[in-house]
Image 1 (spheres, helix red, strand yellow):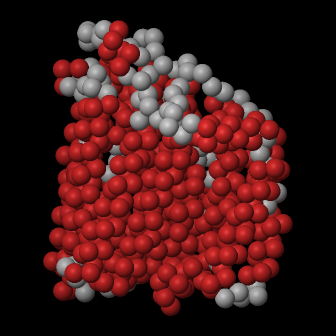
Image 2 (cartoon, one colour; image 1 turned 30 degrees about the vertical axis):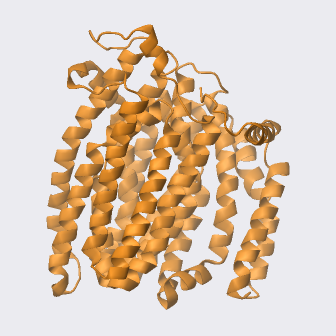
Image 3 (cartoon, rainbow, N blue to C red; image 1 turned 90 degrees about the horizontal axis):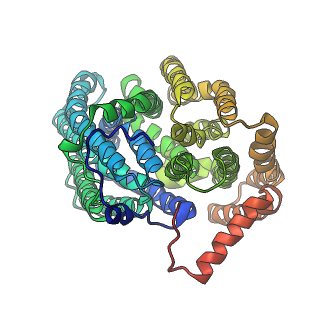
Length: 527
């Protein structure tokens, strides 16, 4: 392997042997990623009505505006995914020198990005916040939230390299445990802040403290788990940085476009409508993210595995990983999507009260778009492992530009539903192009994709979904809804297992469950 590591001194054999990826294989990584991502989302779901009732819709809307704007600049410009990819490819050969050079280049980038992007965040706040519609007495609060938003961007980027290195060497499980701890930290402290009535600014302070604690923890964990992979400035090589940036430049476009798509709705709502409507849009988007994370968590766990296989590790081809993963993702998404979509008005009314009706429409529009959007999400980490996501970067840019334009136009005409529609319509048109790129790059047939990823996952449970919808028309009492949703999940899991999964996937699931029952204490090398 050409390491392009310059004259870095290569480690001894004992040093190379010291890096042994830990975890419970890809299944364990997926499980802990689900736990971590859903813990984060549940934190938002639990905290939204608490903070909203404690400090009011205007104050919460300002908080959401600063969070959305800050998210636009919490960008690693693709370096994060590229770091994980290059580290993961180097793991099978235990090329420590290569990993040191990649870690150093990544660390230098994040240090610079923390300074530059936090400054850009401050400028964005200065240009945007004065144009939002909120009461004059909230102006000091708005600028305090802006200051904390800048701090959040700086701290998050400053420590980001540690997380990517840990993921690349197979320590994703441990990173996920830290993320679960972060979610619990936010829930406990935010509830205390709301109970004490300290103010919405204190909620933002909790966010910054949580990110700081998480960053320090990842730094310590990297030093403990991978002491040989140093990130010293003397290990920096410009050739490695440019190689990293060649891959990351495509991921940069993909990432920026993705964040624009995700955050534009809240920002446009704040600029086009009274600030209180931002809270309603945020509530609808939270439900959408809850459904989307079913596949998003899979994608996070797939990248290190696909990268290691690209580097020569044992395992099925990445094309089969895409087909099986997308089929599983569509099945899992349907388990959540169907009851959420059918009972959305009741869910929102229970969660937010009478104001939930507006949020329910936003959530329904965004959730429906997942039927299309879900089919390319796992292709992103797999194509990243191959080293090129140029086609997806172009499509994401088109989606971002057309989506923001349509959202602004329709939002001005019909309000909140128009903003959601504007952002959802482009993906319905573009998704076939996303899928065709994946099939061509992974040398897969369209027939296999249609049967395994669409017909079987959706078709097998369609009759059950129709029955659940028919029952919903009878307007069952609210206490009965969780029972109906639970019955749907059980029935859909059984039908999907026997009729939608292929024989290999069923065997893998049985094998994984059997291993966990026999030896839950044993750890399996993810390679």
